[in-house]
Image (cartoon, rainbow, N blue to C red):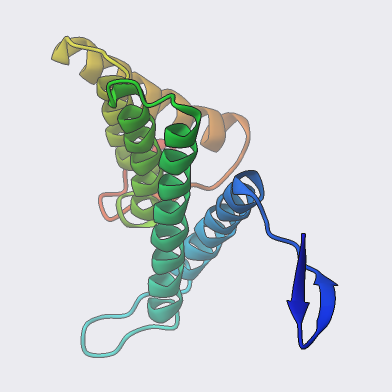
Length: 171
């Protein structure tokens, strides 16, 4: 695409939806890592914030901003393609994306086990699971098994949250 600037035609790159969406995903991923690292610096208390307090806020704001932009782009793309139908599939996709974003934000605050369980329950409900007992059982099992996989089998240290929940606390 060309654009005339001061009488001269100049090639201008206008990123499409896919490039913008990939950029948003990368920003969310980098901001999630940044947020996890910031939470490990120490948050301090209300009278004296620690070194990780403001970086944690910046990470959360980045995640929310890029996540919201990604959701808006997703809805626009679905609407342009005519895939919105009665609104349910696109709404469901956006809500699953919101649940994943909420998990990333809640991870350093609640810990992986609790945040993962809540996110799993939300996604199961959004994808059409109806029986609450089944949703709770699968979500709890998913939270525990994913924590077991990462902590014990892969040796990855995951946030345990304020309650000290996770395999590392019991082993």
